Length: 223
Image (cartoon, rainbow, N blue to C red; front, side, top):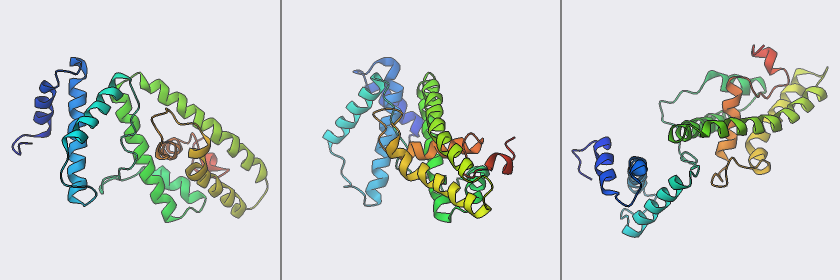
């Protein structure tokens, strides 16, 4: 790709060549192709793949992108991506985890998955605003599963020590990371990695819709 062109120019030029794609989809297909191509170049420089990108691989990816768009398939774009080094997570993620004595490793996992889920949700909504309703309904589904468990630990911890409350709350945090992705159906058949469920729980924890400590609502001032 010509070095003197910026990404937007490249996408526009590529879109003009996609005559077999519906005109309304050409810009989106071009943007996704350029994004995929750039990712492959980075992986090649890092030794994660061969430097040569064969034509059949390019054609295959093009066909997959077109099919996903035509069928309005949800693509988990950020499933294995990492936040940029400059990323700063919302302080409430750390506040929620610190209430239950979470480790630094648990915090790092939460930050990574929250970023992945938030970026994915934004991307889906931008591609198709009607998806916001689907995202909201799935948030309700995840919150319901969490609520059943949080109600139980609140009952079990009534009158018990802070140490016990932290232990129960940390177990709930672990459930959101390890068990929930295996037990709860995904938002769509095309979303198969655990990061969306893991990250969405962290997204929901920011405004207090979910939490880990039995008394998180009062302790963090959500009410």
